[in-house]
Image 1 (tube, rainbow, N blue to C red):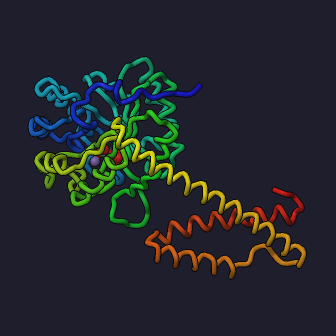
Image 2 (image 1 turned 180 degrees about the horizontal axis):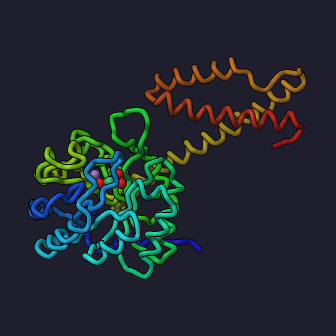
Amino acid sequence: MPLHPAPLADWPFRKGPFFLVAGPCAAESREQVMATAHALKGLPVSLFRAGIWKPRTRPNSFEGMGVAALAWLQEMKQHCGLPYCVEVANSEHVEAALKYGADALWIGARTTVNPFTVQEIADALAGIDIPVLIKNPVNPDVDLWTGAMERFLQSGKTRVMAIHRGFSTYHQTIYRNRPMWEIPLELKRRMPGLPLLCDPSHISGKRSLLQEVSQKALDLNFDGLMIETHPNPEEARSDREQQLTPVALHKLLDNLLLRKSGTEDPLLLSSLEELRKEVDRLDDAILQTIAERMELSEEIGKFKQENGLAIYQPERYNEILTRMMGQALAQNLSADLIARIWELIHKESIRHQRLVMRGKNQ
Ligand code: PEP
Ligand code: MN
């Protein structure tokens, strides 16, 4: 039975042009929670966020204020009217968060990797009507992320949302966690109605990249953003370099260009239709060319078979790759992309040649 997440239109909390979750990495004190929430007044914040139990990579770091902080969040909600969400990583967290009136829960990247824990949380929430936001696992595994969604959907939740927070790598990159945008887009392809947020804070790891990453997410039609906000980031007890003051968040939001996800305007629609027809024409031509190329490969296969030659000729493959990558650069295309495409073409070509050698026609 296919499982369907509820569309964003069925979600509560929505305020502005997109779904915005803002608040500190961690709730550090009652004053810090209140100060952040007050400073966020006037911004279209859908949900306030704050970590209570912080999953830290190394021991002896600040691990969150625990249940005490839930009381501050509850008070913040009463005073400022802002619904809030916290991260939960086991069934005890779930119980405590529900007791203090959390409006939504999020599953952290280190939890999504573990199906036992995800299932434990889904079971603890069975029959309870609370929305769940699920971060991607730390490793780039779209199945694991899809599986976490399915565990909640199967337990009867329909309001599930995905949060893209990037993927960790051994090698240092400009990002704290590489975005690998193709992964959240693949998740969205598999579950078309699934609301999808981007967490530019954990992708960027530093303030200077936040604007650019947030814009990219909106350009890719993400439904919203989760951004860490702290009244005094320099003094934050976790994720100091990536948190924004509420004023800086305001500025970031003002600078964002909003894109429409579609249009009803008949004139715009017909111009888009024309361009899409051209794209379809080119796609057809690409497919036809690939088919012709494979026919040629089969002919070469026959030739090699008749003359006792091996299929794989490394020098020839290198020659093709070098030639295509050189042309890619001249055409302003990514050499890496072209190399990956030709690796696939070459693999398929070898498959066709082997079929011919084994005397089968495909
Ligand atoms: C967080 O949101 O503060 C957090 C710990 O995130 P992640 O699970 O993405 O590392
Ligand atoms: Mn954080």
